[in-house]
Length: 209
Ligand code: GRF
Image 1 (spheres, rainbow, N blue to C red):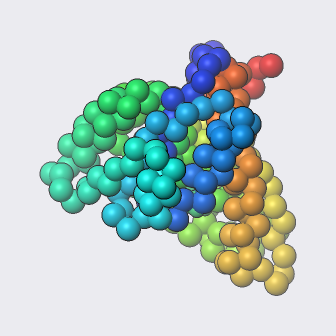
Image 2 (cartoon, rainbow, N blue to C red):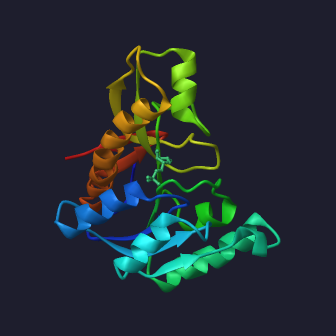
């Protein structure tokens, strides 16, 4: 059994492609002392990402890294790793980051890349998870915080939250209900890491108190 992170303040990077509401929730938790972490840097693969603007307003170092400027995923990630290391990052939180993480990042930040997904994995991985859940007709869905591995939303699960799916739901209403839970469960999972309580046993994440 291996400890995922020793007890201590997390040196965090947030990677985001979009509006950054999970970034907001993580940031607020660091500011009011619920989450023992510093967001050292925010990186986006989209120039127009709202998360980039928010980071700049918050005086967090913020970078746009354009994937099309690199010849391969590895070349892009080599640059990303160097940026993250310059900022002393130890843990990477993907918050609406719309790219698969490759070998270079996974080797550099082994067991230290975390993602949030808006479904109860292993159900409905990939894009449009809330729409997939509605179309399938499940009565409950939710969100999952998990460690990132080489697959698409396949890594060891840290925490999940369940929400009901109602007959009158559409994608928006279900997404909103799930998002409220995402904004709680993400910082709570990271806080368990900061407390040194998370251990990996095979593909199971165990919380030791
Ligand atoms: C969230 O639903 C998250 O679960 C998924 O992408 C969305 C990002 O939203 N991975 P935001 O940019 O954090 O508001």
